[in-house]
Each structure stands twice: as C-alpha cells, then as structure tokens.
Length: 470
Image (cartoon, rainbow, N blue to C red; front, side, top):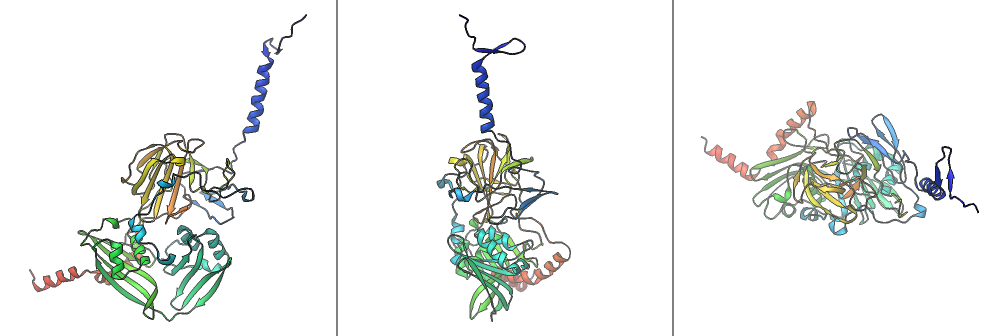
C-alpha cells in the first residue's frame, strides 16, 4: 500500500507540510479581519511651530486650519448606541487637583461672573473658558446674532446653575442700554432694560492682617472684584504669600442703583508685598498693564514638545471609546510620540501633583497662575516633584506607555477656570506691551491714576519731608 505524504510540492521540488500551509492561511485571514488601515481623517499631523484655529460647536464638525491647509478632525459619534460614562483617561479621584484656600475663599457669589471684554475676545470663547455649557452658548449665539458685536471695554455678566447651564446673560452696551437674556425652558428670551444707575468712582485701601481675600472683603470688595484682581496679577504675585503688614489700594467704577451696585469695573490696583509694589492698570483695549505699559501675562507654549508630533486622538468631549463603545470625554490631545520623548512644561508654574495614578499612569499636574492648569499623563519617567517651581520649556518628564494606554503616547490637557478646553485651539495668554499712541495715552492717564493709589504711609512720608526739608 502506498503511504500518503501530508505535504505539497512546489515548483522547485521543496515539500511543505499541509499544516504549515493551513497555518499561514489562518494568519493571513486573521490579519485582514483584525487589521484596518489607518484613516487619515482620524489623525492630524500638526507642526509645533504653527498655530491652530478652529471653532468647536455642540454637535457640529468644523475644519481646523493649520498654516495654509485645512484638515477635518473627525470625532467618534454614535450616541444612539452608546451610554455616557466618565473619561477613562484620568487619574484616581483622590488624586484630582483640589482647590486651594484662595480658590475656595474667592468662590463666586450665586455663580455670578462679571467680565470686561478685551482685545481678541469672542462671546463663545469667553463663556467656554469659564465652563458654561457649550450647548447653551451655541443656542444663545445662534439665535441672537447681535452678540457677535461685543466691543472692547464693554461689561458682560452671567449666572449659571450647579451644572454650568446658563441662566442669565447681561450685556451692558452703554449706561442706558442693557440687553438681558434669560433662560425660558429650552430657549432664551431677550429684553432691553434702561437703568437710571450712575457709574461712580470708588477708592478702597486696606492692610493685610490674615489673608488677602478676608481683608479685601472686610474693606468692601466683592468676591467678583477680588477674583478680577487676583487674575490680573496672577503672574506677578502669589497672593498666598502676602504677609501681615502688606497693603493694597484699589480704584473701581461701580454702577450705583439706589446705593446698591450690581456691576463694577476694576480700573487699577496696587499691592505692596514687603518692599515691592505690584500694579495692574486698565488700558483702553480692556487689558491690564504695569506702570510702564508692559503686559502682565506670561506667554505659553502651544504644545508640550520640542519636535513635531502627530495628533493620534484630538480633544473631544463626546468621544466614542473604541473598546467600551461608551461615550467617554477625551479631555485632552494625544501626541503619538515614542517612549522617552522629552515632555516640556508649557508655561511657568508650580507642580501640584507628580505621581503614579491609576489609568493616567505616571501623572503630572502644574498650576499656572490662578486660572490655568496643565496635565500630562502616561509618562515613562517623572523628573519633577510636588511644590517645585518650573519655567516655560523646562523638561518635566519623559513620555511613555503607563496606566491605561494601548501604546506609547503623551496625553496632554489644558484647564482654564477649572474647565477642560481644547489645548490646540484655546486662547492662551500673550505677553505683549503697549506701543505707539496707545502707550502714550496710557502713560498720560497714569499720571492721574497713580496718585490715587497712594497709601496713607506714602502721604505721611511726603508730609514729613515737606515739613523737614534736607
């Protein structure tokens, strides 16, 4: 009987066992079933030297502009078949950045926020950076197109509920023309109000006895006015380090209605910490400058890397998670970089967290001033410690693949006023001073403002010098 040979012969005479051929076929089939080509619409290569401009609207998909090219950031969407869940790319709850004593003390009264429109502001950008529900912003701005006509120096204010839903929005066009937008179910109703209020100047001075917030409130400043002061000087002065005996002097303009003020504007502030004075003076462009007309902001890097990188997953508050099939917010941008890539701090600040934390893996959080927080996750190695002061461009870590991660990458988040925003498109502070005619006008105004910020001790010293000339 002839024995069967379980093999096949190819042209050159070499015999290959049938099980080897079958195994190869199975591998090929699995490869085509499990592998899918990279969709170029889901990944975006962005040079680090370019600025990205995009508009994010609820349930809208708009192109991003990079240099002279346009690319579409495609979001995972299938809400009908998905359930909303918490972000899966986050540190442990106990490692969340908590508010410090200054944040807690400045908590807004009744969720009221007042804001002076500055250069480059848009209503959508302002409200989004304060954490207002984006669907409400879109609804308001879509229905009332005139809100696109905000002007530098105008006052706006708004209130929200505990879920950040917009309740009311006030737009002070002029002293006698106030537009008020109030929520009515799923819509907003507009009404115009003419007030008999009169804007009056106020001068408030005080000494530090316990801490700035308590002493400022005792002097007559509101929580909102204190918040504006701390944000105006957030890059120059750490208010937590003010000591007993330090002083502050504030100039305000308040709209008085029967001895009650509903709106105010910070005109100038001077704070003495030890032997050094810090100033913030309001200019015609709606921004604050020091007494030399120099900007008070610290500039930021747009990206936490020093080389170009591909965005493997963009910011998306309603991302469909590819594994769980649930809608889980993606609160940052993922940079597809190899393990060991240097990670940079995008700005000057204080490291508040540097540790391993659950799904985030090795995790760093940095506080920049009073408004900004950046977070860096899935790191291979942490190079900083909590409490450490870092500067813009400092190397703080090496990227990696720790925590819940399917491959080496850097997850980077930017938070403004406690709200996660798109780090590729958010308005970042810019350090620029006044020039030309604007600076000349500012310095002329300063001649009248600076004497009004004098402390009583300054006046006493002047009187003593006049009484006892050398």
